[in-house]
Length: 85
Image (cartoon, rainbow, N blue to C red):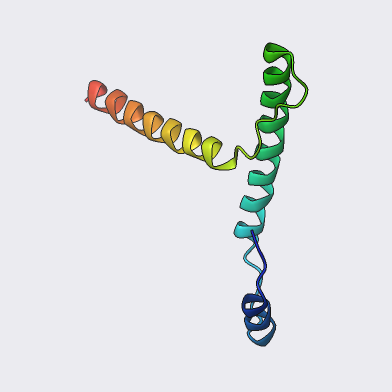
């Protein structure tokens, strides 16, 4: 995320309360980005025998996987419920 002069000036002029859910979600995104990114980078380096390789930022990709898994889970829960009735 880039910080621009306009955004900083606007935030200073219009302070607001912290939304703890936004803070928590950012912490989770940073953790997943580093955790998965470091693991994936080491696998890339090992498999391609090059220590110059890096997985880079994986935040968006991982978030997409999480959303897809949640959709699959919700669909399977619905199927289980329908089978019982």
